[in-house]
Structure formats: C-alpha cells, structure tokens
Picture 1 (tube, rainbow, N blue to C red):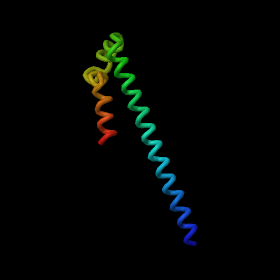
Picture 2: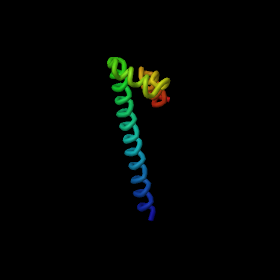
Picture 3: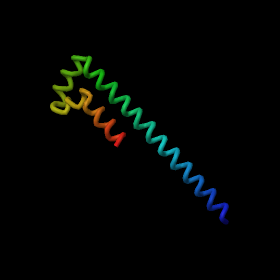
Picture 4: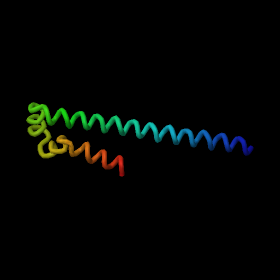
Length: 76
C-alpha cells in the first residue's frame, strides 16, 4: 500500500513540473509576441495611425510599455 502512495505522489510531482514548464513556455511565447507587436508598431506608420484612430489612448501600450510590464510580471 505504501508503494502505491509513493507512485501516486511521484506522478503528481511530475505533473506539477510539466505544468510549470508549460506555463513558462507559454509565457515566453506571449512575451515574444508582445515584443514583435511592439517592434512592428514602432516601425509601421500605418499601424500607428490605425491604433490611434481605433483604440485611442490605449495605443501607448503598444510602444513597448506592455511588453515591459509583462516581462516585469514574469520576473516578479
């Protein structure tokens, strides 16, 4: 009976490790996409004018602020 509990505990610990790795991988992909959108926003005048016209004052987050905030949250 004790061996069964140890195996269940080991499987649970492995699942937790896999889940943590998956969360980190997804977070890094999201950060990469935010950096990509920020760089595109900074270099594309059409996107800048579209953002100012359609999303208004929130468009300042696209200049790298949102990527920086997200990176800070990940590190915190």
